[in-house]
Length: 152
Image 1 (tube, rainbow, N blue to C red):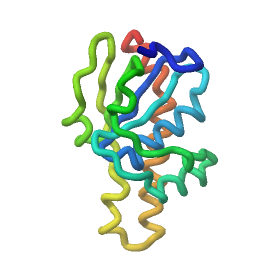
Image 2: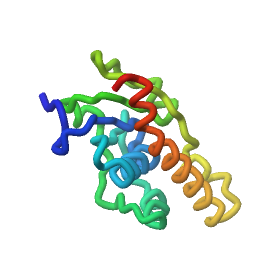
Image 3: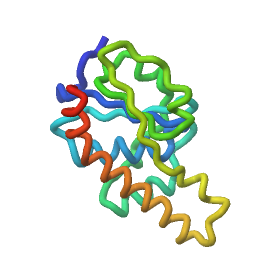
């Protein structure tokens, strides 16, 4: 069993249903903002493919997630996580129990693809992705505090 990633950081899993948008953004932000303090991973309970608009809006912010791929949670079974963060209610409801001392928390974000049908324009749709991207960035910036508060 792998206890730490290659940089010996605390391993954190960002979990969504599809591992196509929010969890990919969170992993990308964590790699960008906290490379010295955590080992970020993302997965899904029912993965699909990476959302091209998520890649696009992250690229606008200077973060390249184009090389990622949607992964099933089972693909990361050999990694010891310190923290698992569910980012959508579907993942929260289907999140398996992790053995102690793994801490699991939920911090939900709106689903940008879910807004596609109701978007008034392509720009309005992109603005939703950008808003969620920025909300995830702000959350990731707070991860060191969350880890400290939880004794991780």
